[in-house]
Amino acid sequence: MNLPKIGWIGTGIMGTAMCRRLMEAGYSCTVYSRTQVKAYSLLDCGACWAETPAEVARQSDIIFTMVGYPTDVEQVILAPENGVLAGCRTENSTEITENNSPRKIIVDMTTSRPSLAEKIASCAAKKGVSALDAPVSGGDIGAKNGTLSIMVGGYRETFDALCPIWEILGKTIHYQGGPGMGQHTKMMNQILIAGTMLGMCEALRYAQCVGLDVPHALKSVSTGAAGSWSLTNLAPRVLRDDFAPGFKITHFVKDLRIALDEAYARNLQIPGVELAERLYSELQDAGLADAGTQALVQWPKKGE
Image (cartoon, rainbow, N blue to C red; front, side):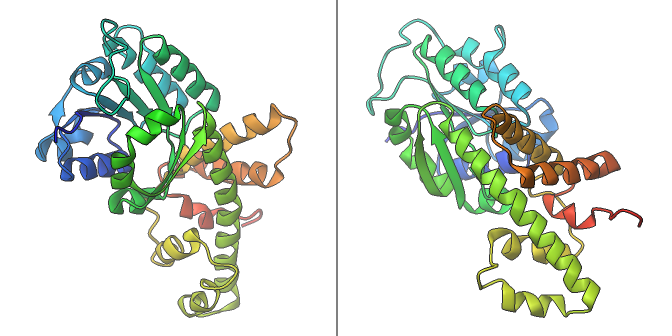
């Protein structure tokens, strides 16, 4: 069976791990990153390099983007000369493949603005290209192990056509609705994480302050009602003073601000997210922008 050719744009912590999983499953990949050195590990494994996002599109059937910010997404996909859509042919653009999906598919896995996902889907449709917004949750561990939660918005037929790929990248894969709905689901996810991270870090600080044997105490609380992914996967990192990023603070601040903007546009108050955004922004300003989100435990209390 001929596998579709994959294009991958964005070779950060998670993007590299996800692209590698596809390559290990037999897919050929063409990659692009603004900093080529970040793609070296994939190039060493057999990926091909492209000089622009447009070139990635010309060489690929399915183009994945996993970049940092909404401005990056817009530039990478919609730039009129070198963007992904610029590299998607307009001739025969409505030709259908054997699995009834459009000839080219764009999948943005960046956590971005829902309105931008809608814009990309609309622009893509005009060229006979299908676009999905498919943000993920699960951090670097989920990316490496293929256990991500993938939240997908766009056309159902395109989502169904990519099932073999979803199963390589993730464990929990759900179609959420039309364009932008994957991003709205990710905002729900980030709102939940904001509260969980606040609770976890405060609990660890409390446990240390009162003199508990923290690893032993975690055995009691992590399997009960207080259990969570963050407690299981990030609390041990905190206890080892390991603040390397599975997900960077700077990207989480971006996500929280998107969630706040979406909420405010609907006259919805989410004070827990407001608090989390303030605390994480203070850490970012203090020089911890590239630390993992578990570094919230280092937030300085007033007067210290």
